[in-house]
Length: 166
Image 1: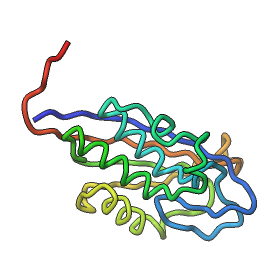
Image 2 (image 1 turned 45 degrees about the vertical axis):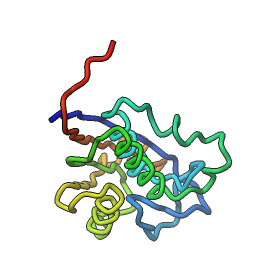
Image 3 (image 1 turned 30 degrees about the vertical axis):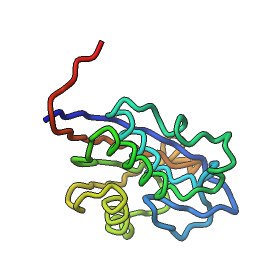
């Protein structure tokens, strides 16, 4: 079995008049996240971790912000497409560990829902998905309520022998 790890990072600025969607969950808040799609910072970090582990680039390569097709796109649907790309390469998600960095909104009440949605999109058991939330104690751009950041790491599994094509 081949094992691959990946890391993803994303950040989105707060904006008035936008929904605040994190981990596929709409969170009541007076500001949302600015982006071409729904700007789901957590799902974007997870997608980048998965794509990176498989050496398939990043979400900007597969879902460019210059393509009107992805304007306002549901990031859960994009994550499902990433999982289909992985399947084509015979990878499956082993586990995901992620952290959202946000002074506000408070995310603890929504973490279970986020884990469920991510697990479903990635075709894994909920126990294979960890979502944590932290603040930066009033420091930096997240602490100053300028935006939200997220990190994610993942493990991909692939059965069979490793090919050595040169």
